[in-house]
Image (cartoon, rainbow, N blue to C red; front, side, top):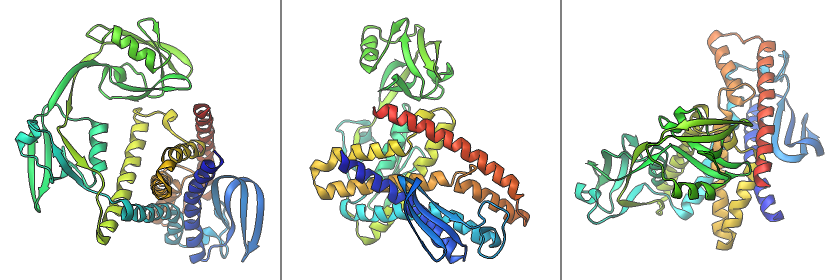
Length: 429
């Protein structure tokens, strides 16, 4: 238990330290006085001062800070943040997220050098399948799926799992012997009645984890994060009871009264399932293959690009209600997840465990880099918005106005972090 917590804290701490180190190095390079460089937050355990900068280690190993002279004030004297050119300040603010993306790239280089990475290379095609009839062959590399460019096997998995598989016609672009070819075919389909949501057991009950847009559940106003309480008056407490109910009462064209809890308030919605047809694919594809040195660099870049795209799309789904705030994880949840992954792989040996932990670094550092670039107050992205406005206007937004906006954003961010932390603790317990 202690070992997995230490490893998880070290991985989380590494991504934060690299982020703050980016700010620190660019601040020093631009002759900005850094008043304190800290690891963690809360009460200071130990500190030292060198060159006008206090270096401190704080009690709670989540987070860190690079505090610069005049960063949040009107001061514009020598060595202050605001005394430097807007270009220099943009570089300092952007350096944190960029260092995170660079850390993810470096970790990807190590992992891919060892384990490999691959395009979506077809390994097998089911005999008698529509894919075989359309001409798909083992060894083909899928480069496009339904108009979406595919660089990695995991991108193809992501597209099929998230967006589903078209039931009428699938269009693939493949590369075979250096030549590109388009394959179009009608897949094998299955038809059943659906309401349009995913679910999982949670500490609060059967939680709705995903709501499919333009399906009856979404149209009823039920959101991801709501708790399913009953179906047609029958109480539902967990996944087992839900599945047992559906076995006895298969969904049909008959309306279903769904009892659910939203933000602590119990509600009901009458939902009429719709007939949905789902498709399946009749081919397998490879996710990993060894790469030459230049291939390692290429696929390391593509690996980071994949996670950046995934994080951005996840934020979009959060804003549209496909995901809820309850799907977020804070530092506590991240550490718990890393610890769980460590427990799952440690029996496979030190090398596999190390590579798996590096994969967590790629995921976490990419997330931290992208999330900090979101144009929200108190985040690096929010600061960059004001700096870009200053560059366009050739004069800064009033410092007190910017300060108030960032302060309000920080308060909201802290409230969100406390909520997420409480939810993480409840889920773990």
